[in-house]
Amino acid sequence: MQLFFLFVLLSLLGSGFSYYFAGLYLDPSTWWMPVVFALGFFVAFYLLWLLFCFIGSLFISLAKTPKKPDHFAYWAVKETCQNLLPFMGARVKVVGLEKIPPNEKFLLICNHISGFDHLCLVAHLPTRILSISKQENEHLFIAGKWMHQAGFLPLDRRNAFSGLRTIQQAIGYLQRGEASVAVSPEGTRSKDGTLLPFHEGSFKIATRTGCPVIVVRIEGTSLIKKNFPLRPTRVTLTVLAVLRKEDYEKGTAVDLSNRCYEILRSSYL
Image (tube, rainbow, N blue to C red; front, side, top):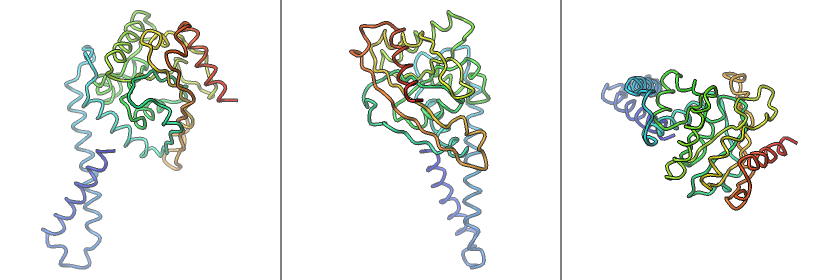
């Protein structure tokens, strides 16, 4: 929320200076004008930010894979998520955040019920976390290119070789300590909220790196679009379990997939 508070501060300063130097303070009937000025400045700053993001996206090529996650691009994506979710009426609560190891990179496994799922993870988890998601997301207007530059991982579900390359890139992030990785092993969003079968390929990220595996259940994100703009939506991210290397190293990726599936499935009961 750094961007939001910066724009609020600049808006208040701009409003105060405009009100004072225009001499409006001499007329008591204009007491309401600083509020209008502040709102105007705030909207103007956000429009300038969007313009900056648009112009910046013109210089980002999707054909070039970043060698490592870009810090500024990730900050821009995270700030955008933190501002977009409240605007959409999402009230996000994280349960069990203290379970997540603060100084380690990890693989996060979660269910998938909405396009807002991973936005909530990025916005509300304190660590840098990059998601594996469908390749089509890279073609989202403005946002897709910034996500690409930030190091988010596209997955072409029709191309097995592309999937392997994405897994290898995620492994590299963890081994070099550059970012945590989030994945929804169902592969597609659940339309009725039930937990779909897992694809075990993404669990190789953990078995090959020995990183902690965080299992998170996401609730409420499927209602954000339905409730906007009339009603707020309560979203809950619940950390169900943290699996250490010693908890799964004797098994295979399939075994780890089955274990995480059962942890998530039991939370539905």
